Length: 574
Image (tube, rainbow, N blue to C red; front, side, top):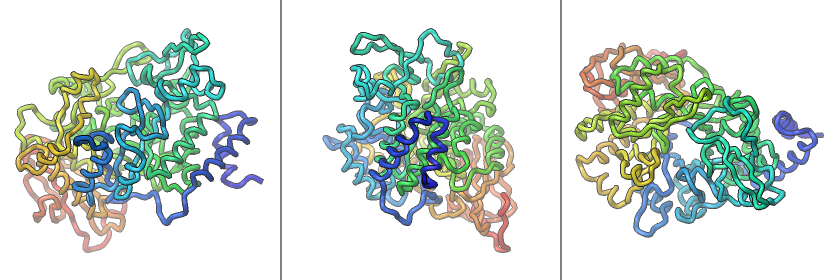
């Protein structure tokens, strides 16, 4: 008689694969679980106010002839201990394009970065997040080369398609052809599904062997220090004729299956889905608490930027108010960020900003030497998909002084660090970097504008030199992070309520779960002083000054005012 676990597997596989293939598939999944099963530990997937991610490339820092992963560890051990809990290592495997997101070998560390021993060394002091780029694989991968040679095992790993068929309904994330022609060793010409580029060949999850490969990879990552796994572009992994080929029901079934398997193997691993789409589509990846532990909070970056550029919080307030009224399944939360290795996505602003406001953002980014990435629409038109610019440069005017730049940027980051969910800081944000226009010019790749590699010695000199932008940003952010880490009201599960303070101020109130303490987090997004009135006095945790119920906020000033509730719980129903 099948165990409860096997019955759960059977249920999830039923809509994915024919009945005759499921028994062998279940047996293979059970074997993989035994292969990678970890000892039982008293550990959970839970997160708290101390959980703060740093997003970084494995070679984002360099020094002489040292392996970059060792350089990253040196920097982290000197500057980040007690500050950052988790490091998200962007794809660290051999690759051929898209700065790591076209993987040649999922199981080997790129030798230019280091090896698995360097990953394990970094894991001694930090939990790690790995990328699982499983929608597609590099055209140079062993799998694809074996497919081209005609090896039987790999003949169904990829999606052969009819170039004459109608694909107008397929959602296109990039303005590139959907199908790419390739010639196999037997001279057969085939057209293969390539969602992102001709070098990134989509995998065929209708083939059970591909599912097994993905499970083996996920379990290896979890067993090798991957406390979290980011599922890159996961919404695209299942294709069906006549659909948009994104967010199909089968995608959710596969994620649920991965979650079930990882839990069964005692990995205590968090799954994080990356789907750069409107909010209503994004939150479906929580499932009923049985899919992603966290989903990316994609509206936060463009709406925060918009609030500062318009000096008006109306749009940000409206979205945050609706969000605060929502409930997520237990033990799930949002993965909050403002900047990343990619640009600032515009699709998540659908139904939040109108076309005129999106056009305003595009114009502002272009005025500040940023770049715009476009996508193809089903009707043949193109829409702006992504703003490619360093977030600091997007927020600031070119002629702003160092202090003004730091004021604006840190004020925006204070929203990130206060917002309900788990915050993630991109390393260029923590380090006060600027747009790398030379990198764009050299490569012709828009996203390189925010992917500059930094020489460690030069970076550290700037971090200790008073008055530099890097020093101002880094030390102010470090102070904010320390403040956050000491306050249970900032735990991801703590309540959040949006404060109505007028268009120039953005404010949220966070309340720790017992309701004994509240923190009012308020930011002036305007260039003019603004008066703040709150009902209760308290202490500004940022400036460590008393607040008597009223104060004037300087332009771009942020305050975190901690109130005590001596009469008992005050925020149990926020």
